[in-house]
Amino acid sequence: CVPLLKSIRIRDHIGPGYEPFSVTAEHTDRIYEHFLKMVESRWFLPLHATDTHGSPLPRLIECYINTAFGGEGGMAKDAPDQWVRLQALMAQGLLWHEMQ
Image (cartoon, rainbow, N blue to C red):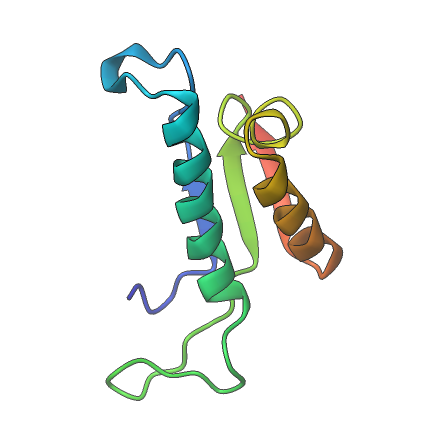
Protein backbone atom coordinates (compact mmCIF):
# COMPACT_ATOMS: atom_id res chain seq x y z
CA CYS A 1 0.00 0.00 0.00
CA VAL A 2 1.28 3.48 -0.88
CA PRO A 3 -0.10 5.63 1.96
CA LEU A 4 -0.07 9.05 0.30
CA LEU A 5 -1.03 8.03 -3.25
CA LYS A 6 -3.18 10.77 -4.76
CA SER A 7 -1.84 10.80 -8.30
CA ILE A 8 -0.83 8.03 -10.71
CA ARG A 9 1.51 8.69 -13.66
CA ILE A 10 2.01 6.04 -16.32
CA ARG A 11 4.54 7.11 -18.91
CA ASP A 12 5.36 3.96 -20.84
CA HIS A 13 2.87 2.76 -23.39
CA ILE A 14 1.53 -0.73 -23.59
CA GLY A 15 -0.53 -2.61 -26.10
CA PRO A 16 -0.24 -4.56 -29.32
CA GLY A 17 3.02 -3.85 -31.09
CA TYR A 18 5.07 -2.93 -28.03
CA GLU A 19 7.87 -5.28 -29.01
CA PRO A 20 10.01 -5.49 -25.85
CA PHE A 21 7.18 -7.22 -24.02
CA SER A 22 5.46 -8.91 -27.00
CA VAL A 23 2.08 -7.79 -25.67
CA THR A 24 -0.88 -9.31 -27.51
CA ALA A 25 -4.43 -7.95 -27.66
CA GLU A 26 -5.41 -10.52 -25.03
CA HIS A 27 -2.70 -9.25 -22.69
CA THR A 28 -3.69 -5.63 -23.33
CA ASP A 29 -7.21 -6.26 -22.07
CA ARG A 30 -5.85 -7.85 -18.89
CA ILE A 31 -3.33 -5.05 -18.35
CA TYR A 32 -6.08 -2.43 -18.63
CA GLU A 33 -8.19 -4.46 -16.20
CA HIS A 34 -5.36 -4.54 -13.64
CA PHE A 35 -4.75 -0.82 -14.15
CA LEU A 36 -8.42 -0.02 -13.62
CA LYS A 37 -8.61 -2.19 -10.50
CA MET A 38 -5.64 -0.25 -9.11
CA VAL A 39 -7.39 3.06 -9.80
CA GLU A 40 -10.71 1.84 -8.38
CA SER A 41 -9.02 0.54 -5.23
CA ARG A 42 -7.92 4.07 -4.37
CA TRP A 43 -11.05 5.79 -5.69
CA PHE A 44 -13.58 3.73 -3.71
CA LEU A 45 -11.87 3.99 -0.33
CA PRO A 46 -14.13 3.74 2.70
CA LEU A 47 -14.69 6.97 4.61
CA HIS A 48 -11.82 7.51 7.08
CA ALA A 49 -9.73 4.66 5.61
CA THR A 50 -6.37 4.11 7.32
CA ASP A 51 -3.24 2.08 6.71
CA THR A 52 -1.95 -0.59 9.10
CA HIS A 53 -0.37 2.13 11.27
CA GLY A 54 -3.61 4.11 11.57
CA SER A 55 -2.52 6.88 9.19
CA PRO A 56 -5.24 8.23 6.89
CA LEU A 57 -5.28 6.99 3.29
CA PRO A 58 -6.14 9.74 0.82
CA ARG A 59 -8.48 9.06 -2.06
CA LEU A 60 -6.96 9.03 -5.53
CA ILE A 61 -7.47 12.39 -7.24
CA GLU A 62 -5.95 12.09 -10.70
CA CYS A 63 -4.26 9.91 -13.31
CA TYR A 64 -1.68 11.01 -15.86
CA ILE A 65 -1.48 8.59 -18.76
CA ASN A 66 0.72 8.49 -21.83
CA THR A 67 -1.61 8.89 -24.84
CA ALA A 68 -0.23 5.65 -26.28
CA PHE A 69 -1.52 3.86 -23.17
CA GLY A 70 -4.94 5.32 -22.51
CA GLY A 71 -7.70 7.55 -23.72
CA GLU A 72 -9.74 7.45 -26.86
CA GLY A 73 -6.91 5.97 -28.92
CA GLY A 74 -5.85 3.33 -26.41
CA MET A 75 -8.18 1.97 -23.78
CA ALA A 76 -11.35 3.01 -25.60
CA LYS A 77 -10.35 0.93 -28.62
CA ASP A 78 -8.51 -1.98 -27.00
CA ALA A 79 -10.57 -2.44 -23.82
CA PRO A 80 -14.00 -0.81 -24.26
CA ASP A 81 -15.51 -2.33 -21.08
CA GLN A 82 -12.70 -0.89 -18.96
CA TRP A 83 -12.99 2.46 -20.78
CA VAL A 84 -16.69 2.66 -19.83
CA ARG A 85 -15.79 2.01 -16.18
CA LEU A 86 -13.09 4.68 -16.33
CA GLN A 87 -15.53 7.17 -17.85
CA ALA A 88 -17.86 6.51 -14.89
CA LEU A 89 -15.00 7.38 -12.50
CA MET A 90 -14.34 10.58 -14.44
CA ALA A 91 -18.04 11.46 -14.20
CA GLN A 92 -17.66 11.08 -10.42
CA GLY A 93 -14.74 13.52 -10.40
CA LEU A 94 -11.55 11.55 -11.15
CA LEU A 95 -9.19 13.85 -13.06
CA TRP A 96 -7.81 12.18 -16.19
CA HIS A 97 -4.85 13.74 -17.99
CA GLU A 98 -3.31 12.51 -21.21
CA MET A 99 0.30 13.37 -21.99
CA GLN A 100 2.67 12.75 -24.87
